[in-house]
Length: 169
Image (cartoon, rainbow, N blue to C red; front, side, top):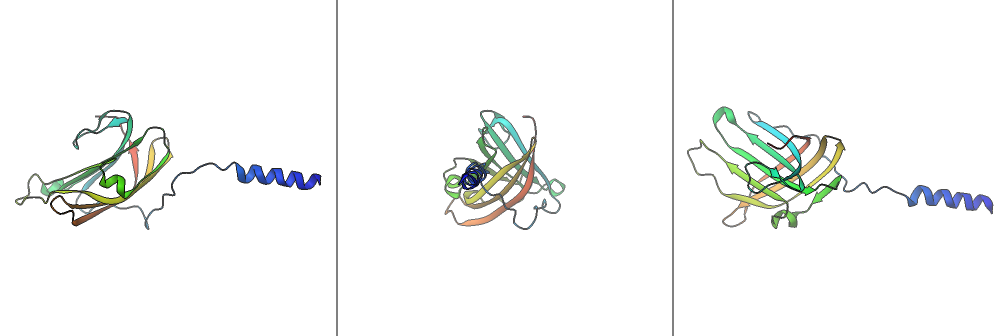
């Protein structure tokens, strides 16, 4: 009887005290590369927020920023921000949160293009992340962009990358 009680107690200790690991961040195949001929930035800022898409500002969130630019040809610039509470070590932003604009802002720009850039907005997707060490987060993002005119999908941005901490500008 004593042996059964000890086994029962060990069972409760081993399986009853699981640490919550948060969402399961799974990379699709491998880390994504920056597009050919582009320069990319994968950064995050603590105690930040975004009021417009240009630069993060002082705030109460952890803000992640993806930026890609084809500077050699004065071509397109693509960037998006998303924010999470400072207290979390893993997260998941669902499609309905992206559509509602609760956590994501984006911008497409082409300062030297001879044609107008189609106005787009985030219309769906999913973003997951988890802290991997004191200054890095692993982010798995798939954000669908659609026309602001009729919400028809026009592009999907997939980023599976480590984001590094930076100081606010």
